[in-house]
Length: 446
Image (cartoon, rainbow, N blue to C red):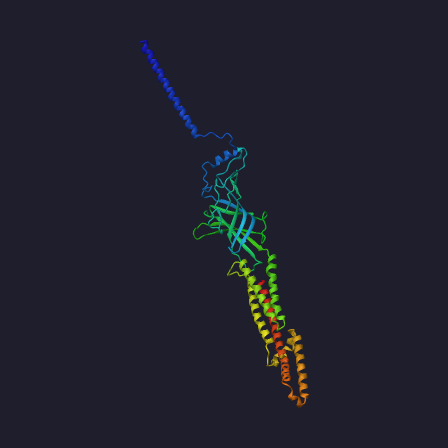
């Protein structure tokens, strides 16, 4: 009997022991699971680590960080570093720093809870950013114009982002006054998908900073302008806000004055000096030919330097083109003058023309030297005629050589009159072409 009671006691002790082991095993398993759910904090975590973990917990960087009925205000500015213009592609390239400031209501904290931390840096891919784009971009395939730099977030939710960028924008150039032209180009920024009720864009005052600019060797930037506009597109009823930076560029032209303007003056002088050469001089044609070659070389230079623009042809190109026509016609005049002065004429110059050429008109044209030679030839011819009337009849049987000599001497005054006419044509052409060049210079310099 006593043995049975001892056996029952042993069985009960074993049962209690097994139950206690199972309970401990279950407690151990549950403790392991709890460790997996709640990770232990990093032993060297800083206030910045804790702050970023708390802020980015369940943060959606693709959602605008405010209620849908609220408006996110983005302030934009630009610091220009360098500007370059490509006339052939009608583009302007601007190296700049874009300044963007907005408020993210999801990124606010109390600095006293994080060791007095008032601002923290976030990578550009960690938080929401406004989709501000360059509307008139020349690189349409590139959606992201701004560089991937960090953003500075303050405890009140204000975000400052200053990414460096290379902006390539389309620009309509007017090269009519090249190389003394002034070009105006614009950089138009706006949100690509958010309308004005969701994102409102404003500009800093001043919005454009030129303190860090590296001067371009060819262009000077005048004081830029910035203006904000609201546009209603046909696709959507909501307004879209954009900010435009207007840049006025003035071309530096001292080098062009030496390369283009000085040769233009020389071309005018060469074209006019040919009319002061003697009428019989064949160098007239040579001088005009050299002038035409010089103008043609400059026309080829313009094709390499300036793009072909149908509506804005530079005035300097029109001047050289007109000068080429003038030189060609002056060459024609020179050929006519040489023909008049060198051809043996058998008929005398009409008296009415000779009357004007030997009178006041001839003196005004600077023909005094030719008039004097004509008068001297006429006096010689009169003296010979008087001597012929005084000779006797037996002198009529003089040799044929003497007759030929007298016949050739009779032609000298006639030929000299035609030389006078050729010189008068030269002087009249000089006055006409001088006035024509003056008109061209006045018209193309405006």
